[in-house]
Amino acid sequence: MAYGRFFEDFSVGEKIKHWPGRTITETDDTWFSLLCQNDNPLHIDDNYSSKYTQHGQRLTNGTLVFAIAVGQTVRDLSGRAIANLEYEKVTHHAPVFHGDTIYTESEVLETRVTSKGDRGTVLTETVVKNQDGTKVMSFLKRVLVPMKHHETMGEGKLPFD
Image (cartoon, rainbow, N blue to C red):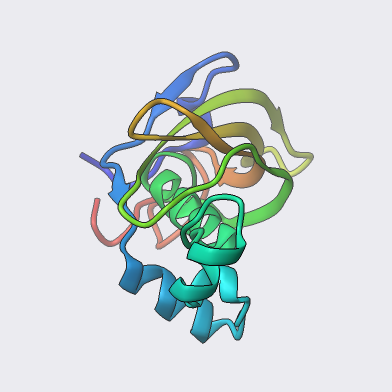
């Protein structure tokens, strides 16, 4: 199976279930929080989180959830992208905890051919749910994707085609 899609492979209204899911561990969250210098005790201090927060436990860093969710969509949405143009309206609907598994599904909202005629933009909405089916996040993503006749790598092919 080829990696990624061409512009012509997207259709408005199409729903794409991304696979596999990803279980987020304490280690993932701690390292990510420390790497991005987010030292909020809500993410890295179990004593604080268990005694002084409404959930009684640490929450997974929301930007980690976002990063994993975006990563889950790459194969299906932007594997062939010329550019990721924008992310917007990132919404946190519910908390994610250590040990939760997240799954993503995207819907194609809009496709537009650009003035160059050899590429187009694809707008999707991605919904992230946990293992119980609770919606935990959603966001919009717009990517610039080549058409099948677009000249890349000589013959419009990627090195792994």
